[in-house]
Image (cartoon, rainbow, N blue to C red; front, top):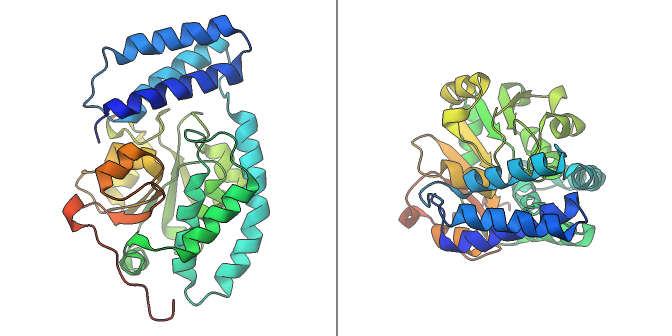
Length: 297
């Protein structure tokens, strides 16, 4: 997915938020914004948005000498998610369709996204998780379940801290031993790294590898050797979040994109409004349709 003009205000907002998180000096805030404005005036709009996001975050981390500005935010999000997960695990266990409920909750948890909202509350997370169980979903979870259960190897591309706890609830409904979970190669925004994956206990049930990339998405030409190998071996790929959607949409692989539409640019690209829960397979926009749930739903 290319970068659109409407992505530029988001770059500026993220840059200012991160500058303020890293320093209380208004002079640094102004300096950062001027630098970013200079970059975007010359950027290649044909590359996906996570490429510019990475440049901004690399610059700010170096300028402030802080390799992980969102460390405390991620810890808070992980603590909240671990608290909520046991409650929702019980709901999954007693649901009429455990895989479907787990998938919906994993999609709902994509709301824990500091690129959109740094200060999301427990109330907001609970509300979105409940909506994910109740509202219409675009895509076909029945087909997704069929494909992951028949696959020999499943590649699961994680997105955010906190969210990754709910990813575990979905992975538990596959056969975890055949799942390889991919996390970011270095801290960026609140995206999950190996540290957060281990906090979620994923190392106890599945294989965890690094993408080798410090962008909020998957850039295959820069991917780690482990990811390149797993990418080729996988029968089915699950890609969580908008960043992975932005960098991988249109690539000729069997990818299911699971995310909540959280910005107008992505909404326009997929043809569904902000707030929509998505579980779409890599295919042309005109093929999108809402699939029926099982009768027991």
